[in-house]
Image (cartoon, rainbow, N blue to C red; front, side, top):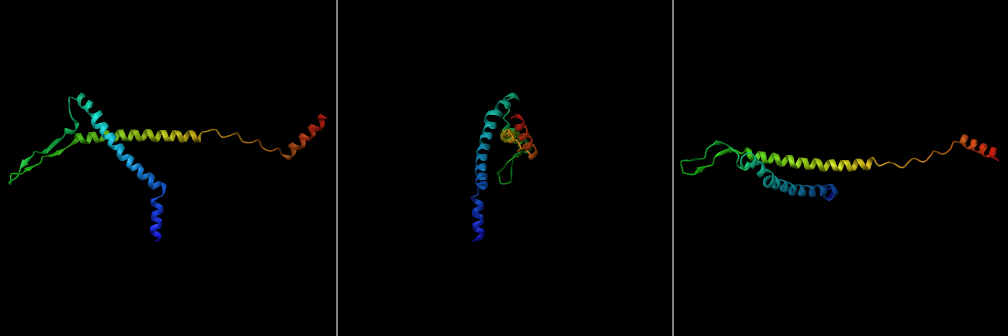
Amino acid sequence: MGMLKEFKEFAVKGNVIDLAVGVIIGGAFGKIVSSFVNDVVMPPIGLLVGGVDFKDLNLVLKEASLNEAGEEIAAVTLNYGMFIQNVVDFVIIAFVIFLAIKGINSMNRKKEEAPAPPPAPPAPTPSEKLLEEIRDLLKK
């Protein structure tokens, strides 16, 4: 029973729940970035380089053929266009994460750099107190 209780405490800790939420949001964010790259960024780039659709860029290693039974054997291709799109996805995600972490770090630095209240003046030493008394007596 002790192990089950320990696992329950671990599973409901804030860190595990935060991690789960982060993974879910990260998956959704990945889909948004993929759509942004595929539907917004890559078409103009493809148009600029001569109307190329990057998804279709590939290098045929072996042409499609028919086997003895008359069934078609698919071509073997190296799909470097999809690789280019995935690299663009990664760069955009990495840049957004960099900006988010940079913003968080700058907010943390501002909190750390907030001026501390001035320290209270030190209490007078016994000799200073004695000198103040002498001064007060001389004024009278």
